[in-house]
Length: 122
Image 1: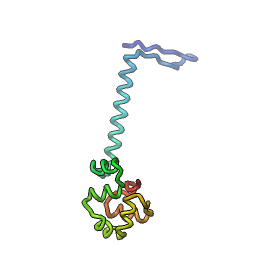
Image 2: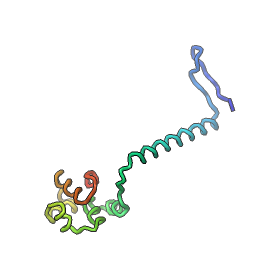
Image 3: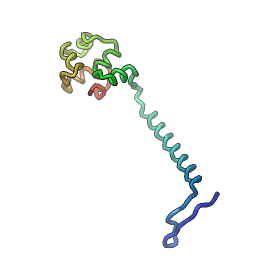
Image 4: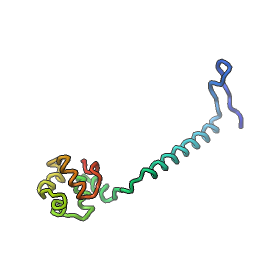
């Protein structure tokens, strides 16, 4: 299996030429090690927060993130308005894409919906 060719420059190994079958084994082993390291990194940085399929589907279908999360939480606009201390029309305009909402407004909505702020940007 030692069909590796060494090419030297100035008396020192500069290149190694390996058979394709050996290279494929090495490449696969390296990819597996990289995948394992990426998985371990993802597990160690998991904050436990997940995005439910219903929210993903609603947003994919065009729903504003605020609406998708509100409906997932089983909240009415009235309940969200009371929890976030905002008006129903304002929330409705945000959900309908007629208004963007200030940073302060989105923070209130995120807190009321119990989601990270960055998930409410459309």
